[in-house]
Length: 302
Ligand SMILES: NC(=O)c1ccc[n+]([C@@H]2O[C@H](COP(=O)([O-])OP(=O)(O)OC[C@H]3O[C@@H](n4cnc5c(N)ncnc54)[C@H](O)[C@@H]3O)[C@@H](O)[C@H]2O)c1
Image (cartoon, rainbow, N blue to C red; front, side, top):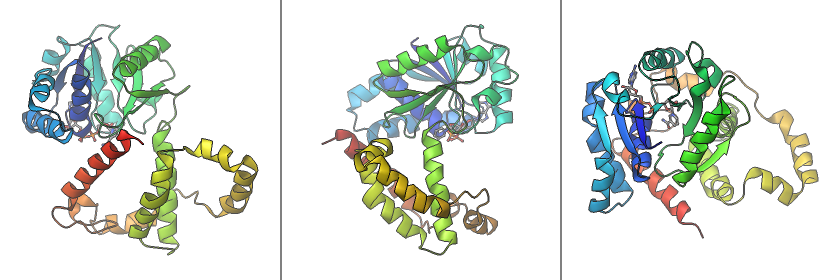
């Protein structure tokens, strides 16, 4: 499998295209929005610059990625398709229905959904056995992890094939035994976000303090030793004692006033200039750069 089609050339679609092309695959990107398609080349070049790729090598990578103005034009040039359209079940269903009308029954389809149930994404598909959840992390050309999961009707041959391709690219793949919303990473991530919001609502600290605690402690620890190894390392008896004391105080909330308050005031975060923190002009770009350079620093290893 060397020719991939990507539906949706937004943040993830263009990043996945770069990751695949860096590994030698050919990629055709289709997006319903002509402006997104028009900016594809420029965004790919910028991503490669941020990877510190030499111009000659970057040229080889960009030459492997082309844009398609229609879905029909894309599907005739590929062996597998990745959907990276917005995280809405109705949009995914509409895209998969249009796609399946144009491709052979055996062509693999990967969904980059973050938190939707794969089984629900596959509902209505003519051939749900070919749908595999392949969850990349942003930026896909830098973050090693790709989570792979089946829906209830997925044929495990397609799951194995996806893992083989990704492992061949040097990715770190993990394979879930079954479909759960959020795979593993987002479940862990949002358990932590929920507790952070709980601390804000309890007026324990401000949002900047939460980020300081994470970046100066757990963010460092967890890139070296995961929470399961750490539980064994400190001892399961101690881990159990801590949970006995702490668990009753941890959030199990399903409502989030600390988010609703800024949202109701039109504060959506970076895009609106304010959210939990303030976002003066330039901060968004600075954070994007710090994110990528920080990940690259960690990847170099000890
Ligand atoms: N943003 C992240 O960090 C991240 C990480 C992992 C997974 N994901 C998942 O990846 C998927 C895409 O997210 P994103 O952040 O790239 O979104 P995005 O909004 O940046 O990109 C989505 C693209 O899909 C296009 N699109 C919408 N409807 C379409 C259609 N019918 N046909 C073709 N193209 C269409 C849009 O024009 C847009 O360019 C979502 O399922 C999201 O949950 C996102």
